[in-house]
Amino acid sequence: MSEPLVIDETQSAILDTVRRFNADVVAPVASELDARDDPEDCFSWEIIEKADELGIRTLTLSEDWGGLGVDSLTAALVIEELAKADIGISVVMAQTLKIAQILQLALTEAQQQKYIPMFRDTPRGLLAIGITEPETASNYFVQHDAPFQTKAEKVDGGWRINGMKHFISNGNRANVYLLFAQTEKGKPLAEGATCFLLDRSLDGFTIGRVHDKMGERLANNAELLFENCFVPDENVVGAVGKGFQVLVDFFPASNAYAAATIIGTATTAYERALDWARNRVQGGKPLIEHDGIRAQLAEMHMLLDVARTYVRKATWMADNRDLGWEPALAALPKVFASQAAWKIVTWAAEMHGGYGYMRELGLEKLMRDAAAFLHSDGVNRTLLLKAAKMLF
Ligand SMILES: Cc1cc2nc3c(=O)[nH]c(=O)nc-3n(C[C@H](O)[C@H](O)[C@H](O)COP(=O)(O)OP(=O)(O)OC[C@H]3O[C@@H](n4cnc5c(N)ncnc54)[C@H](O)[C@@H]3O)c2cc1C
Image (cartoon, rainbow, N blue to C red; front, side, top):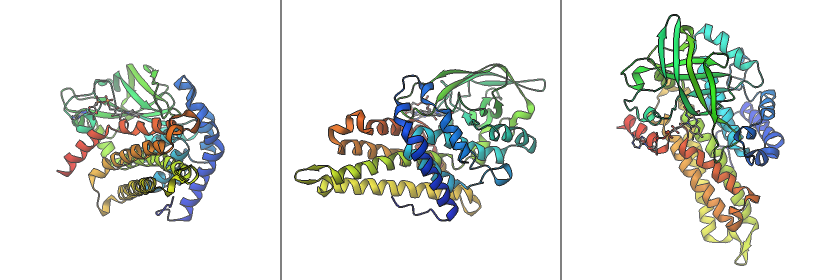
């Protein structure tokens, strides 16, 4: 498909690298990893180490920090490209690329000096963000008054954290985390939660279950458990009680990155459908010569193009907020892209007839993968409510 906003040679060169990585490293093993029973076995450190070698893992670190300092639009192009080979790999990297951006913007100089090298200097360095917990989930998106159950209590020199998070992407694989915990009793999330920086060495911080997901299996999601975990004062990110401001101020492209991921998966489904329609003959001619199929392929193309354009707009505006920013762009691109993607993957499977349902052609993997983004990065309905609050 065309890439209308690939505007410079650097972006093209980066995308060429990602395409080679997809073809040589991810595509040959993705189906086999996806089919493993134990979710932990679906994750591959070899893939992450190769992504590190090629500079993909640290693309959003500034040149001063040893990365390429790519902007949000370029990061979204990379995230989309990665998802064309496998959605899980795209998710692992998308989390890492976006949290690396936050670390450079939201952390103090001293925090950066400690935590950025910790992430950068190990080829297996990955990043995660812990917000969702069993009883406080969509409440964060709709800004309901309920507090987090994960609490940080003030003690001498720091905070003592108790509670748990779940569903956390890279939860069991990351070495640096952003964690949200309730610090102000009786206050709603937006006024009473604080953002903390964590690493794996903290006593009282352990990993719980690794979730067994229907798709997106090359990424792991896990529980984060806190039992009297002491975190020093210097690990508070931003102001105490103003955790969500960290996300509002420094995370505007996050939703568009999620949209970019699902667009990558949907693009693969579309290309598979197109190829199939050109080659499969029924009714005396290739499927693509039947009007019903042609029209559906054109609609798939249109949905992808619009979803992609929305991501381009949101990422560009996220980096140029001085020129105007529409807050709903932090909620809506993923909703549109995931709804479009769900149509595209299910139509693509249907277009393959009985083959679409058979594991051998891999359409069923694309369907399982695409379903992830109806649920993750905020359930769509709650993102629409979030957008409505901003718009009306
Ligand atoms: C693959 C995956 C990866 C994830 N990664 C992370 C991560 O890295 N970090 C993290 O913090 N979280 C992560 N999540 C959590 C994710 O962001 C969702 O917010 C979370 O799954 C939704 O919470 P819940 O399942 O408890 O649903 P609930 O909050 O219980 O919602 C259930 C249903 O009710 C609807 N609903 C809820 N509230 C309202 C309301 N006020 N009005 C109308 N409808 C409402 C929802 O739209 C949904 O349909 C991930 C989830 C998935 C599936």
